[in-house]
Length: 495
Image 1: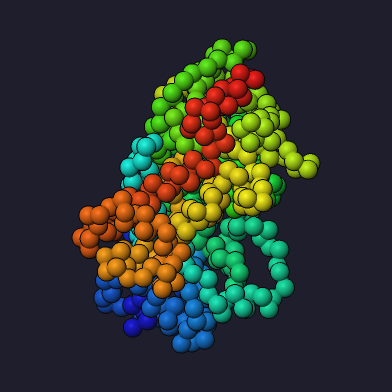
Image 2 (image 1 turned 45 degrees about the horizontal axis):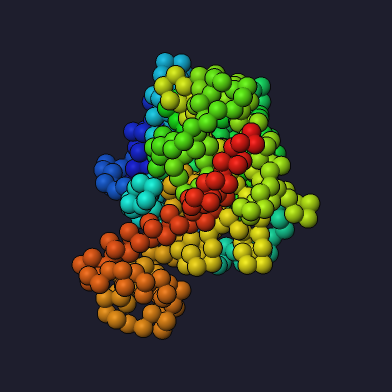
């Protein structure tokens, strides 16, 4: 029966364009080698199973032969090895992409996104498990996701990784050396991973899709060199150059400081994709002009965080004004607003930038950030405060800034438990799954006396949306109050 699953995987690869016509036996023999087999009989009939189930059967066979260990980590290492047997070489992928790009950039990315799913680099079956909903807020509908697609860490894999000396190769998950890497207990396999080579301002860069897509065509642009994130004029110019090459995509960067930055500050990269976030549709509520940059329209965006939007037809002028604002912000303090450019020699101010096209114009959103901490707020003054940590405790990075909440997997079970407890009247403190949410849950119940079994889940989803809007307000350096906006205007006047 194993021959039927091998044949089914090869047929899948042929159907999805991973194996070209005439590559059938090459693909079969590559799979036989990976599975420790030296003979094969072409089956008369193929099992009608989705890709993930075919891979599961082949991994189980490998386990029985002692080729693969137990647990999800070992499973992923081995099924990626199988897909790597059938994935075209990087040069072939690049050749096909740039051939399509010459005719239509959008057609090229459509193909590359489908390819990245076909290779199982983007695991569609797991991503489908993520919970997603829209929540109405004072700033418009925001997207809420509970991420369930990343597999839980295997205790055995964690223990095995601790016994091994740190490899240091690849240096991080974004390095170009990941392409084709077999992986190990503490590093994912990447035999089915293919980078697109591109140039930005004379530097060698690459593009890939995120294996755990949070939104449509969630992609990553990365420097071929392993060097730290840095927000400066060159970063603004690169962002604008990317949206010139890919006008149907937005692209943004995490900030370059801890707390307000992303999870991988050691490697310069941006994130983009074809998706409209709530912040993009938020209006400019008051405009302003900066002397010397008359060709750029500037304004404050109506958003819970502090956003300056720049729009204009000339990339260089936009990048110049963005750099002027960044330079001013790096050095800016306003004690009355609780903003300090530095304390104890540590710099606190930076920017989260997002670029997109508006017809013939370029647009840059500059989100002002500050990572100062205090005894009262040890995780950050402009970070979700402690009373919100039961929902969101992690850093507010680029994706959240734009209005998409990425919430931890634990919330799926916890919100279900809270809903059940509110309906039944159970003691919220008695259950570890609900104790963390007890105070908030009582407030929800008081606001919604109509809460019952039929509507509890929907009410909690809406309330989570309200919490996320408050999370962003906490992360905003200038509050939405009259005093906060007056302080924002003082900074703008300083420009």
